[in-house]
Each structure stands twice: as C-alpha cells, then as structure tokens.
Length: 100
Image (cartoon, rainbow, N blue to C red; front, side, top):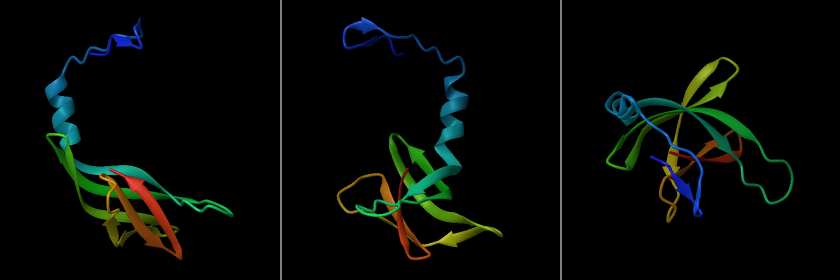
C-alpha cells in the first residue's frame, strides 16, 4: 500500500487478489526492451523476450530471445558485473543492455 511520498498523501493502492498476481509474476516469459549505451552517435533499441523467474525478490534469467524480421532468435546474454539485475546481449554488432 502506497500512502505517503515526501510527507504528502499521494495514492492508496489496494490489490484485491495479491496471491494470483504474485504467482503470475513469479515465472514466465516477459517482453523487455534492450538499449544501447553509446556515448557518441546513435543509440538503438531491440525487442527482447526474457524467460525467467522471481523468487522472494531475486530474479533469474533462463533464456533471452531477440526480435528479427522473421521472428525471435535465441541469443547469448551475460550479467553485468557489479550491477545486479542488469544484463547484456550482443546482436548485429551492438551491445544491448536490459534489466530483469
């Protein structure tokens, strides 16, 4: 329940079926956007499908697929050292970052 932010009332959120929602979010395939972090030049985005699960606040990635013109293709991903929940995937000469 969210009721206060910086000392002033903001909103009250009530979840009627919390168990069903948390079970749904615990594991499955999720749509994620990958983004480049180029300091100079153009930055790009890519559509990803991440298969993973979340248990007690910790999330685990099992597989990542990226979108192509002919569908989704499995990709090789890796976690970013020192940045919990941040991963990279290398596609067509670009490194894309995503969070899960």
